[in-house]
Length: 361
Image (tube, rainbow, N blue to C red; front, side):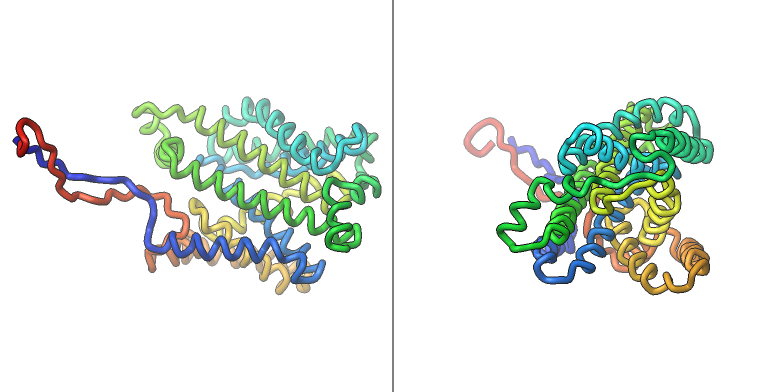
């Protein structure tokens, strides 16, 4: 007797994902060689793009997948930066090691933060995150050992003798400042790759499926056994860790910090939201498109003074009106192309023979 069983398989890959993976690998190889191919100013611009992309991917993970609309992510940027400064100045830790410590401390800060903000919903959650960021800024502004309200700078010896800088000076014959910029750039590139890899793997996993269910309908997700609070908490902690690391790395490169700059809602939250909104919220590709467009708009419009922010706001409004899912969402809807596909597709259906009994069933 034979039993005919259709063979099905769940996949997320699309026709465009394989060629894109090859192109991305080539682009990464070229990106790693950038400090040897372009000027120091261009390396600093690429560093800015990479770190803003990391921040945007984390905000997109929170808002686009977990439904946590935060306007207080500058709390973790600033706290991570100040934690790095404290480790270097007060404890004598190498700045590169201090970056990782800053990420851990930022995640620890997120635990009491989540305890309060997760009791709020919708716009109240957003306002709550902003209030907590302001509280953290005011507290750190009282820290006299780190300059108080005026801020402070990293010791010259600390940045000149960072792990890897001496080796790069000897091997590539770079100046200390050039080696420092190249090192922070490579770390930002690695952080960007790890962040996108983490977000994509999470979204393709069972936890990602549960996260999407929570975003779409939290009550329905709870009804089918998804622990919504646990999923949101894990995403919030992960985003705070990566954001803290990014904030610390940004200020290793800047080497100068002040409370107003480190906790700037415009630089570290408003611009990030703009990037995600125009690129496409709820997609991995959206922040990539958004950060590239934002960089070119910033360089194009920066000479217009206060009109610069007004023009960015107008562009954001137009995109939300005519492309609610962002520019990448509009492109993907019309072409069907997905470079980081997360939608589950059921493929197969071929008939297999399962034999039982004698030689022929």
